[in-house]
Length: 115
Image (cartoon, rainbow, N blue to C red):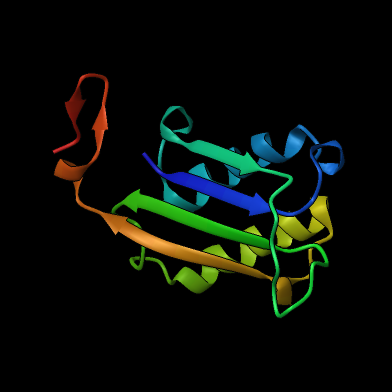
């Protein structure tokens, strides 16, 4: 049930549709989770400042039941930063990713919880 939320100050018109698809594929591979459980939310047009500047930037959040910290988060960081930079041209020094390992009992899906 990994979720990846990418907030950015870039306009919707500059975000290619393929980004969501590629994020889903990469997250499935890196986290070892089935594609059908991956949720990606890209939120454009945000009023954001990073380091006092409104130049392109992103604030991201990756959460998952397990897998956060089991493989070094540095691995996920590199892959995700590279993909976002490839499609959105946001410099890696203008982006944060916050990781959150979730308890299965605290995540609901399909009228139930995972634990």
